Length: 184
View 1 (cartoon, rainbow, N blue to C red):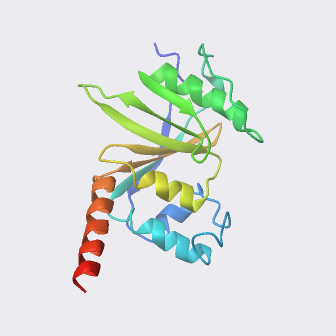
View 2: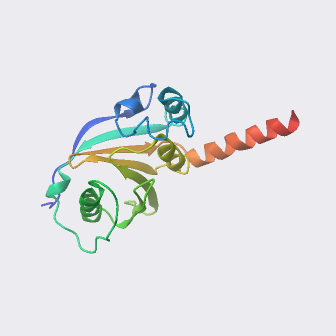
């Protein structure tokens, strides 16, 4: 008998449209709006070019506040409700996985988990909503099977899984751009 509450998959799919990521409600589209992109629409297009046809999303409903306390949760200083939510995340992760979870800022957490048959997958993520540039910078560093996790609240996790080597695709795109620039 498991000590973990049952997770329910509310939705799962491949990113196929411009609105799929927007609907997940994991980004504050007005955060730092003038730093990288002139408006949320341009930011969404920048993110979508690395998601559509290249990633899967899953929305899980799970009562994180019902998971038994796990030992050794690190002290983490952060604003708002992040500290309490980080405890839920710590309890869930260490009840369900073998691996490492660390807390930071922009993104709020990162680590790895052991895969059933050997190997590791990396993850990074945020509590609540994140800035578009934080998501995109973290996302473009992931490889196949790595995931982004958004803890929207104590009942919902959004998991975005790379279906391809995103980091490799970014590297190839940068190389192609540099090569084209040099030969022009």
